[in-house]
Image (cartoon, rainbow, N blue to C red; front, side):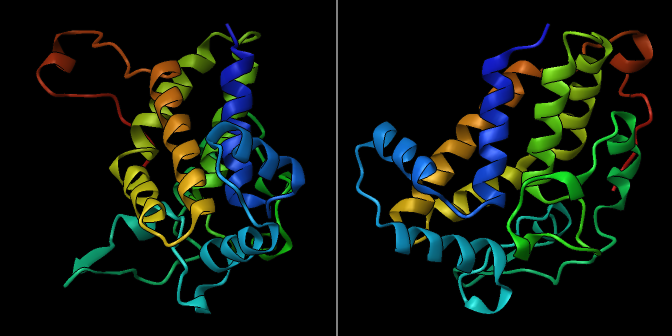
Length: 209
């Protein structure tokens, strides 16, 4: 069955990565944390960190990039994003008719040739799966398989990098993303071992990036 709370939590977490913070978003973050946020600074943090690679503060939110990121002498090095880097997700998105171009996202995060493995896209996809789970129980299995395949340690690394930024706003975004990822793991738990072959380490095939 669907869980409106999880659906909304994942939708809100995706929006934090895809939309510049408006007054409502800032009010919610302030109320939850007790912190004071300057709207102008928060919006600048959003664009510098999530949208503009040349800002010097950009942290790429793409799975295929974070999987190849390396830390050298306390500095993280990220390979350039590839517009085909998330093409392994196409068949998954098509399963439920999920179209990233229809998401409410900042203009700097829209347009053709955007990698499909943006963390905001992944969370938005799972929010749709959670919402639709009431009508189709098989989607719970889909959500679990998707989570196992695409939301691994890299997503926690991304959150950790946000939490190290010199920004109260980004710290709050990191906290919200951590809670959302916890919610994903609870709502879409790992699939149960179904037979002896699985127990021996042979798992069903899956679409990979």
